[in-house]
Length: 119
Image (tube, rainbow, N blue to C red; front, side, top):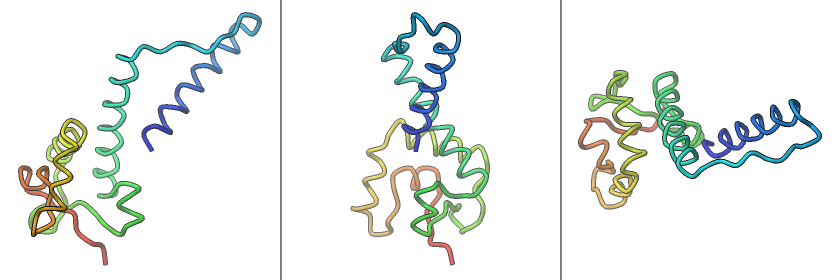
């Protein structure tokens, strides 16, 4: 989803450059630092907004899952932001779900959250 949003942003920027100067148009070049930074920021923003508004990302909605605190209630905004940053910076921690008997990621254990099925 984040790559689609970034691709749409790039095409929008290319369209603006095209409309300004049609005769000498060429697709804008983007540095790897800008692309990497944009990906990290967009990933954190995507997860944060999805979890803060609906308690689920698009993928979690398809699977019937939602983010919850340790008691099954709504997660507070600061913890959502920390979890989004933790998931983007340390994605390997999500693989712990496959090894954990309680099916919790490293992010869930550290931040006392969990992903639960929705009725």
